[in-house]
Length: 135
Length: 383
Image (cartoon, rainbow over all chains, first blue to last red; front, top):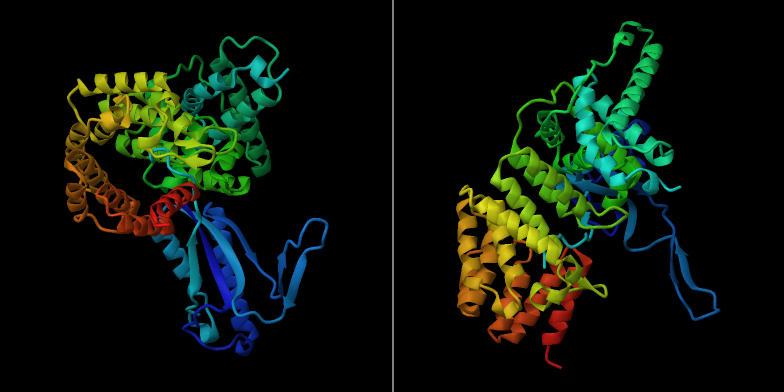
């Protein structure tokens, strides 16, 4: 049992197999794409494998502490950043193989002409507690 | 008055498997029976019964059966069907061990994923609430509720009194034990409690071996993390170990071993017992530990066992022998680089050790282990 964060990138990731730009999709193609992801999300929530899932807004800012009693330093918001995360899914599954299977399924969401998008998804294991039989 | 003052929560939870079994035998399906018992359990905790509960089980059966009938009536009303109202309890249902054992088999049934089986076992056998399980696993309560309800759906039509696979029950219980600890409920302690009940229900030395293994690992827990830092076995303050748990674990193991039906859990428990038995790390009987690793390999070759064996050989026959034994193990096994680092360190090759500790830290999947490995790497790096 392990938790995985599946990250979807707008930019900064690897280019998808299906290279048709988003703005060239017909409304029907776009609807089919969104529907596929919503269906998958609902199914994974019902199976108890999806812990949370969110899409992120495009704009972002850098923030840091700037000393006691001073307002935080804010850089941005930026319209363009090099690496832009579009959203995430937090999963808890039986095995790494299951996480790979789900990422592949998400990547197969239909795109132009109903062909799979083949988008690259980033999969990161979440740190867990030390098992009781270690140490 | 708090619930604990009026009703012993642990005694309530202990009664749960039997009560589920009784409801199923009276004609409830497993999913509804399990729901009804949870309702009764919540009722006992929220509104403790005023009377002195001498017979907690009888009280739970009464309240759970009433909850079940209420549910049936409301379902029936909704569906507009009348015939199901005829359901009445059979008089004098007594608990049977077979039903309780059947509940273990059902909750760990092969149609369920290990994650679901763990959750369902904690609810239907251990009697924890969905919220308690969700807290312990650090997942939202809604997710855990979905996981349990989906698991129960998958079990529809599978009877409670079927023979099942005891090795799978043991695997799920050990997974549960290893889930770590967070939240108000100690999941490892719950796994021990449920395994203790399973020992009483079966005549299988391997189940006793599993209980011994859990007790012996659990005994070291107070010494494993001190001040937010992971302390490796060799450096643990052994006075912090739970002597009562060690004594019980060793006794349970010895009695299992006399049955002369060795299995992997007994062999693992024997290794844990040899560690527990050593007054200091230096006095550990590594030669015997290597022998037990050989026994373990006979039950199924696995790189994880070979890794443990290589470290034990490193202690028994010296780090060079350990490194040679490690060569047969693939580097994709968890903790391979930590073991390699440790053996290099013992062999006096500190540069290689520092590099391997750093690599082990990079691959660690728990923060405490990662910090420990980084400290090791830092310590060995030339100033």
